[in-house]
Image (cartoon, rainbow, N blue to C red):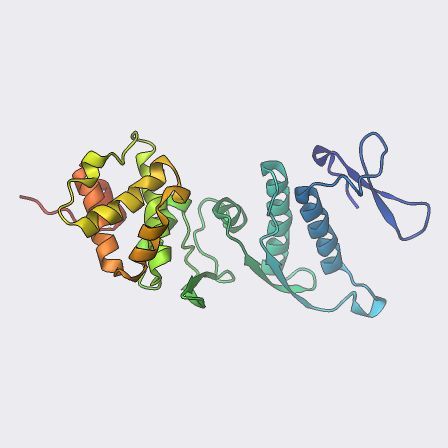
Length: 269
C-alpha cells in the first residue's frame, strides 16, 4: 500500500506475512490515536484495493459494479482531493472499458466533491456514459429525479435556488430550511438584515411570524427560532412561505436578484 505522509501516518508491513500496521512518523502504532477522518480514508483505501482484486483467487477477475456512499466525510481538503483523484481514475477506466469495473454509483451530499469528481475537461459538458440524479426526501418518502446527462449542480448556492424552484420539493420543513440558507448566504455578503423594522413592514401577523422565522437564521441560526412558532407554522401552506420569502427581497430592494435566480423576467414600466 501507499504512504500518505500528509495524514501523519503510513501503512507498513508487519513481520507476519499478509498483515499491515498503521504507523506514525515516530514509529509508534497509530491504532488507538486515529482520527475519524483517518479511519474514513483508510477504510476507503482498503475498499479500493478490494475492487482491484478479491478476497479469494477465484474472485480476482470478477466484473464489478461499485457503490460508493460519501467517501469524504470528516476529511480535510487535501485528502478530499486525493479521494477525488482516485475515483476519477476509476471513472476514466470505466469509460475506456479498462479493467473489470463496469459501473460506478457514487452518492454524496458534498457539492465541492461532486464538482470535483464530475469535472471532465473544462470544455466537455456532457458524457453519454454519465448520468445524474437528485434524491429528495419529502414526508419520509425518498424520491429520485433524473437529469440524464445534464449535471444539475453548479454551486451550492445555485442548488438551493434550484431546489426552491423544483416541484419535487413538497415538504414544508425542507422549503423553510432552503429559504433560510439562501437568506443567510446572500444577505451575509450585504450586511445584517433581520431588524424588527423589516418584519413590521409585513401587514399580517402571520407574515410577520414567518418573516421573523426566516430572518432569524441570519443573526442567530436555526436554534433561535421559537419552538411554539416552529410548531405553529408546520401546517401553513408552502405558498405563504414563498410569498413572504419573495417580499423579503422586494422590501430590501433586491428583487432583481430574486428574479434572476428564479429565472423570472422583470416587468418594465
